[in-house]
Image (cartoon, rainbow, N blue to C red):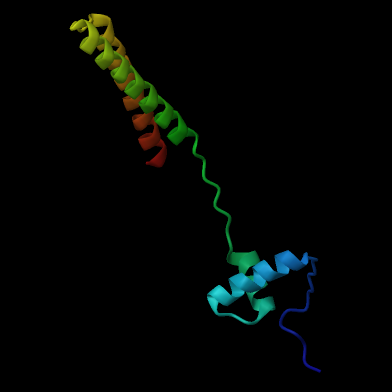
Length: 109
């Protein structure tokens, strides 16, 4: 008998549900050889882990700014006056949003 090109054997166990998931993914790729598929995924496959902390901070900051704008608009509509503190607060929120956007852009570059 000729020597195998892959003489080292690696085995692992899966549940029936995991096996069905593997077979489903194989079907999506159009492959029928489970050994080739698992070997390819073990060597070339990758896991994507996305960190959404920056996006969450930005969304919270935008939400706070929108809330402040709504409160200021209600106050203007009821009193007819625009206060300097309101403008300063809006500028502060805008600076916070810009800061978060710049930080996110730095991380991407």
